[in-house]
Image (cartoon, rainbow, N blue to C red; front, side, top):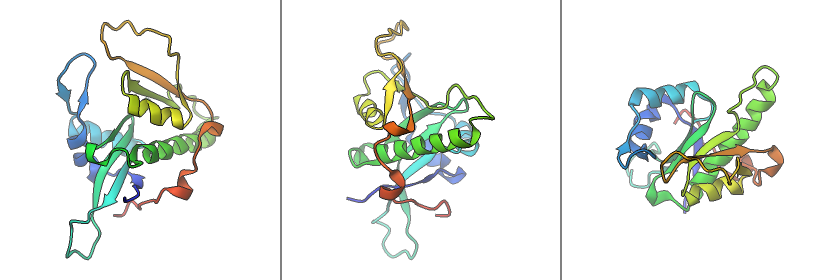
Length: 187
């Protein structure tokens, strides 16, 4: 089993992210993709858009390693962490945990350097669709909690986005930079 290699997404990754973005909205049963321009803008404007990669073992005969994008996590313009996605064939291999660990630590670093200058109400906030048990388990494991699990959303939809909040650094259980290989952005 290959360990995930984590790095910040670049503009060159935007088409791959956009192709994997297969999000089902709560208001419809149709799948929606984000426009490439929006994905590119999110990646360019955020310090917390990361990808999880593995070495492509099928690229024999090449002198350079090539990598497969297995999953990603994005930060929206308002600071909310969202769209944690891992391709089905790479699930249950640590990609989601590694991506969320990296984002969580980046949030803490940002809080330390910008806290006095910026009061971002959405820093340390994520949204997960109700019923996404796998995502909820990963977020819970890393110290995120539901804002108030007893609140009914009253959206008229069966599945509504549920707000999750990161409490404090002490709740993060793992030290990602000691256990997760890092992939340079020059690849």
